[in-house]
Length: 387
Image (cartoon, rainbow, N blue to C red):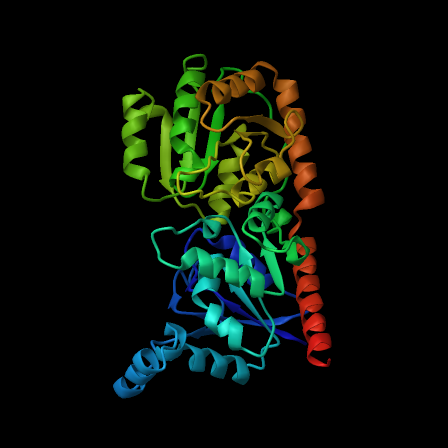
């Protein structure tokens, strides 16, 4: 069985469930993880992990490599030798680097290692870093050097191509959903107008959570018993709680923090709409296809979201949900009111959402596609090496 080395700087932050599913879901490839920091072992149990300690290197050797030979940090810090040793000991056939900025950091290693490597892009890792001298140039070099690049959505693939990546190298690497964990449930409209809305995400700018609160405030003025749950955590939590208070909806908005898969499934089952008004940030951070949205769709929730990133690749306006422009509070509110005014259409969209996810984002099919990309790259590398 061929072996892929999965490199992720932190394995894993709470919001990285999609990576855990991918790494642990491989069936025709063996795998192990290389990481600098192990996090959340209870949430993400996995044994085949190489936690890379800070390499030890003699001061004079470091000085010689850094100042006399002008070598790059991966070399003079000892990372190259450390990674090469682990890959050799583990008999890795392929290196999969998670996130574009990590690929930029490892560019000197990828440039010099004899084996094939690919990098997967997930959203924020495609951002420009104009304040970091040389970063954007290294990103372009990385995209030119790699024989294969993975993108979570067509929209990210287009941005990679705009950065100079050959479109022929790009493969769409959709992160699949374990459908058994989010079974479809038929819903009925609440007789008293007590609609239950949910958004599940990190509490960060690109998720458009302030837009969600403004839209919900407008919706609640028509349906005063409506409730919104914002599941997740992040740096914006305090300001979002303050905004809910300012808008007079604090008693109708819950912030339960990160939820387990069981808790999230239960939350979806008692909800009626999934809200996800993502938007592009000033730093050009964008979504791929949000995993929480796919999970909610699998459970039968119609989506009210924005035409942003990879969202339209999963949600067709008027079929699985309703889409508006980014930052359009009134449009979001009106979409919610449209659905609540036509419960039959709302339930029809929920069924369509579940069927669509089952057809396009089932985990087993996504894993099979990924392993197909791995096999393609290994075979291409062998052919090129034999010439």
